[in-house]
Every structure is written in structure tokens, then in C-alpha cells.
Length: 195
Image (cartoon, rainbow, N blue to C red; front, side, top):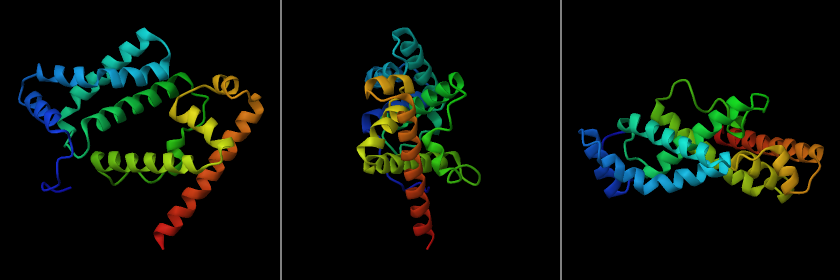
């Protein structure tokens, strides 16, 4: 990206970030106060445990602080922060549940990774994630609800089966079938894009 790209970050947030980057670390407190509730509510959904959610929130802000110089203002600060939180939730979830198959973000594997800068990869990941969300929204409700709850709300199969009053095997087959449809749609989109 070239230098003329517009700054999409909120001007107050951007000013805060610039102050932090020149050594005024107290300015970071303003960002924490503005976005702590947003990160905490995501953590609460993911962990359902207040102390773990609080620890997680602190970890996310620490990661944001450490990586602040990589934020170029090409999105809102909240979007960037949310992606850090989401990636951290996924990382922890995979660590605690290694038996769980690859997350839905992996459906379009091969689109990010080698050959891209971290910023381009981040942008591609965001676009891929948004594309997948919009495709999930198009699924029949039968498949959409279980997939949304599992991948976007980080609910366990057990919780989803109770929540939707489905037998475990039925739930697994719905998620499997939904993922098959998504893979098929993504494949068609890729083929269409290459023509």
C-alpha cells in the first residue's frame, strides 16, 4: 500500500496511537477505556468465566500495545483490536481442543500465507473471514445456526446440541454438510474469479 492511502481510523484513536508511538504511554489508557468493554464481552462469550475473560482482555491489550507500530490506520482501531481478540480466542480454543477439526477459516486455505506481507495477509484474512460470514448467512437455517454457533460464537458441540435440541450425531452431520456446501461455494467463486 502506498502512503497516500486514507487513514480510516477514528481521528481521536489515531491521535492517541501517535502519542503512544512517540513515548506517551499514558495515552494507551484512553484506548483501553474506549474498547475494554468490547473485548471483554467477546471474551465473556468465548470463556464464560469472569476471571479468565478479564485475563484474556488484558492479554489482548498487551498484544495490541506490543504490535501498535504495525497498525497503519487502514481500518478502524476497533476492527484491528477485534481481529487480535478473535485470533487469540481461536488460538486458545485450538490449544485446548486439539481434536477439533480445522476452523472454518481454513476452508479457503492457500489464499493467505507465503508471498504476502503481514499487512496484506491480515487484509486477505479479514476479506476471507467476511466472505465466509456472508456465505454462512446464505446457508439454509438447518446448517447456518449450528455453524454460526460453533465457529463464530465458539460454542461446543455439546452446548449447541442442547441449545438447538439436536442429537449429537445430527448436529455433527449438519455442520459437516454445511461445511461441504461452503467449500463448494468457495471453490466455485475461486474458479469464477480465475476466468
